[in-house]
Length: 301
Image (cartoon, rainbow, N blue to C red; front, side, top):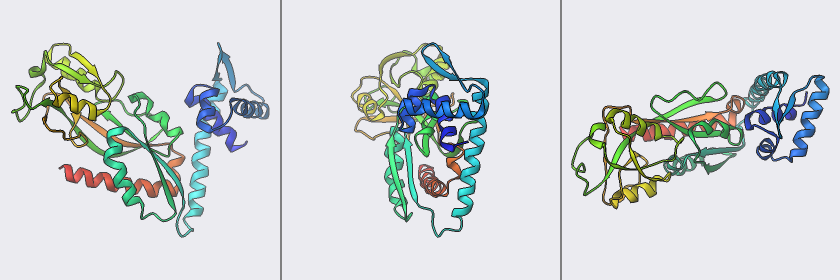
């Protein structure tokens, strides 16, 4: 079996169809279809089936896609075993992060990564809904993701490397009645106008917990995913918000108040596909990223 065809089958499953898989693999949809047809002919069982105008894997196709994960992981372990005898592994490593983490991590990662001879880092900011972070591992070697305290794990399809935990504080303007407080509880926030992220994005579940504890549904005045924009709006007195303590832009007139009474933090983690996690060049970059995160965590403490 051709390794590229197995990778294509995995992409069709993870991306939900031929067109989306083709985009990730940098192929044409026709090329994807041809690889699937060749794989089906080789194995003699249907691997895909039509559903309306789309395509999905049959049980046999799903079983092969599961096995393909093990194959890819084994291949990368074999390569790593050989690379252990090389003076230094080289290559390009693509790293993505959501915007506020990118602002905090990328300058330090690139600075520290400059010491990795032969390694090229390509960074991209990707702001996606909570459920979509694992899918990014098809496009990037390392995906920096975040999830609120108490959120479900990312699932068995990715390796997870903890980086740091960041508290979420209540952000108010300098003229707000609570601005002088050292901390707040959810009951004090009933009736406030909120500036918050779109539904499905990390941080939203924390606001839901605040509302449940206060006994009042939150009044959502604005939905803003860019924390820098939200910070400026809060400072100007247009509402309050939940903002990350360490990555929030310190604009004049902004006050960050610790929130007690509900879990109010987010866990920042690196996600990797199991096969890519075996690549020595990726582990070199991951070690640097963990070191950068440790410095941030120590500085925050």
